[in-house]
Every structure is written in structure tokens, then in C-alpha cells.
Image 1 (cartoon, rainbow, N blue to C red):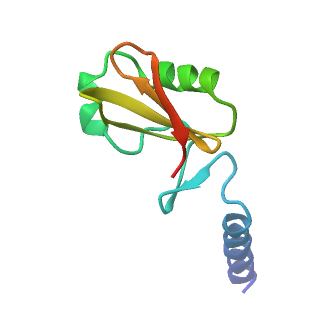
Image 2 (image 1 turned 60 degrees about the vertical axis):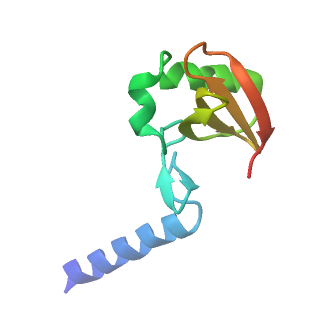
Length: 107
């Protein structure tokens, strides 16, 4: 009986943690929890990128202020770019040159 009570309490505490801010260090994005700075969409384009995800994230963080969100790799103006969510902005970093090619408000 004590084991059941402890398990119920553990489940309730875990559910409360997710309801009030989620698991520590994770963000809620596109209907699921994710680690900030992880690649969400565009994993199939990674072999075409000349710069790493971490380089793109560092470049984007130098171009905008705010909390780091998720990253997408997408076709952009005839090439591919990492789209890094920083605060309320989307920073696009060219996946070949590593240069910031656009900064726009987040959708």
C-alpha cells in the first residue's frame, strides 16, 4: 500500500512539474519539449551544410538577443540556411558561408 501511495505521489509531482514550466532546461516548441539549440526540421539537409549546428547557433546568438529556441535547416534564397529562434526573432545563418543572411520577427 505504501508503494502505491509513493508511486501516485511521484506521478502527481512529475505532472505538476510539466504543467508549471516543463522539465528543467527544456523549451516547449511545436507541441513537444526540446533542448534549446537542437535541430528540429531539416535533418535531411545536414549533409549539404558546410558549417555545424553549433557554429550557426553561436553566430545567431551574436546577432540577436533573447532566449535560444529550436533550429531549423531550410532552403532559403537558392541555398540552405539555419533558422535559429532567438527571443522573438528568427535569425537565418547561411549554412555554407556562416554569415547572417536575415533577421525577422518570429511567427
